[in-house]
Image 1 (spheres, protein in one colour):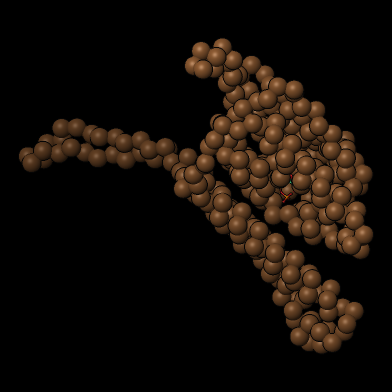
Image 2 (cartoon, protein in one colour; image 1 turned 90 degrees about the vertical axis):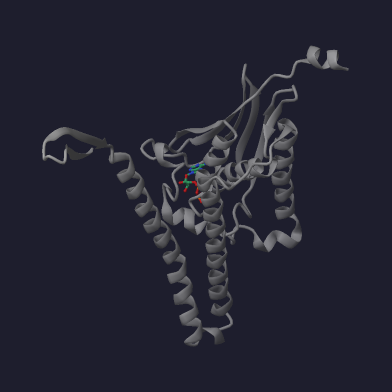
Length: 289
Ligand code: ADP
């Protein structure tokens, strides 16, 4: 708390009063500290891939380019790391637009069962493509492409009722993609991912459960923070930016909903999203027909 005092003095020199202004600086100090921490994180996050690209390019220019075994590998690392930096910058720009309020949502009433099915169909399709003969040689040796080469089974447990919710479909699809990619990335080969969709009185609840690594209890409160990862090396090795869940939380909050996780280390995680929902009343529609 900062206090400012000033005396009210008449021309005669007589002091007729005292003004005291109390200013709460703790909130501002916290914002300043967060901002400094964020700039430091961004610098560090970008320095790591840049240093690695620098050393590979240096090795190539010092002669490795002539080695037909090594050169393609080094170029691939350089390419993957620059791709990851581009993803990170794009994620940071999205977050910055959300922070400044310039990221506008394009809301429309959407059938969420259809949208969720559409997203999951894409993952089933990717699995089929990975299995086709021309993709066989890219399987499992390409950890930088999220999810490529991993086997998984998607189970869908959806309510039969069509649920209509106000959504920005592009942004919401990005959130579902984050949850699905994480479920695949942080699970062993061949596991089951269960996707559920239910309605409660005023909410639609959607969840993605995996049988993966799980999240240690102490890390759970932080995983939606920018750049927070349980295992930095593992996340980076899989091409992660550490920003996916932070963006997801911003999007869901902008839609008036909530996102949270329930996880047990070594057993798996379930990510939940709840969105406000007005059950559609048939009578009302009948009357206006
Ligand atoms: P990243 O790019 O590192 O995946 P995210 O913001 O998507 O960034 O996730 C943050 C961290 O949360 C991850 O690094 C990981 O440690 C943890 N995490 C996210 N999803 C899962 C999951 N399904 N299972 C286990 N850990 C997860």
